[in-house]
Amino acid sequence: MSKTKGKSVPTVGVIGSGSFGTAIVKMLLENSKKVHWCVRNEFVKGALELRGHNPNYLTSINFNVKDLILTTDVNELVAACDVIVLATPSIYLSDTIEKMTVDYTNKLFVSAIKGIVPKHNDVVAHYLRDVFKIGYRNQAVIAGPCHAEEVAMERLSYLTIATAEKENSELLKTLFSSDYIRVKCSTDILGNEYSAILKNVYAIGAGIASGLGYGDNFQAVFVSNAIREMELFLDAVYPEKRDVNETAYLGDLLVTAYSLFSRNRNLGNLIGKGYTVKSAVQSMSMVAEGYYATRGIYEIAFENKLKTPIINTIFSILYEGKDAEKQFEKLTAKLN
Image (cartoon, rainbow, N blue to C red; front, side, top):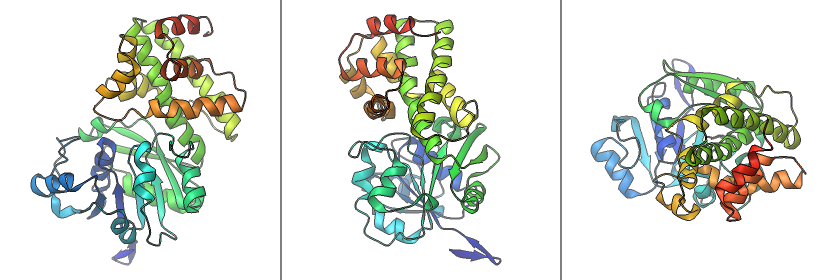
C-alpha cells in the first residue's frame, strides 16, 4: 500500500472491461487517484488510451487516461494491487484468472460477478476458496440494485458489500462511496452472492412473462413468489440470519425483474415473444448471466430436494426445450 499523509492507501485494480467493470472503474476513481484496469484485449486498451472511453460498453463515460494504469496482463495487475475487483462475466472468469501465477497472498479479492463459474458449477466464493485457496477473510462480494447504465449517468445507486472482516468492509466502503453511490456493509458473503445469481434467473422468468403478454398484476405475483422461493433456497444452502426484504436481496430482484436496462429480463422477453433460446442468447450484445446460472441453480435446488417451481419452469424452457407458453400456464396454478 502507498501512503498519503500517514494513511495507508490501497492500490486497487479491476479485472474486466464489460459494462459493470467499466462502471466500477468510474466508481473507484471518485476516491482513488489511480486505478489499475485489466481489459479484454489490445483493441480496448488502445481505444481507452486514444479516446478515453471504452469502445464497447458505456461509451458515454469519459476517463482521464492519466488516472488509469491499463494492461491486458492479469499478473501485472494482481502483482501491483492490494484490492482486486473481479468484474468479468462468470463464463470467462476461470480462463482469465487461472493465468495468475504471481503471489496473491493477503490480497483482497472482490467479486462483482453475479453468476455461476460454469467450468466448476459453483459460486465465485467457493471457486476462489477451492481452486486458489483464497479464504473468505480475503474475499468480498458486491451486490445490490446497481445497474451500470445508471452509474454512468450518476443516478443514485446502492451497493451492499459483504465481507467476513469488518476492517475490509470499512476499507471497501471508503473506496466505493460517493455522492451517487451509497454503501451498506454485510457479513452474508454467500447469501449475497447466491441472491445476486438467483435474481438474474428470476429476471429471465419475468421477461418471459412479459413477452408472453402477462400484465403487471401477474408480474407482482411472480416477484412476490420469487422472493419467497429465494428465501427458501438461501436458507437451505447457507442458513444464516438475514432479511430477504433488504435491498441486496429484494431490491436487486425488483430492479432486475422490472428494469429495461436488465439484460436478463430482455433475454426472457425475446423468448416469450417466440425467439428460440439459442437465437435469443446469440442476439444479446452483452452476457445474460442468468442463462448460464440457471442450470447450476436448478441442480443445487434438485440436490437439496427444494420446492422451486419458478426455477424449475425457467430451467425447463432454457435447457429442456419446453414451450414457454405452456410452461407458464402450468406455473400460474402453482403461484399464490
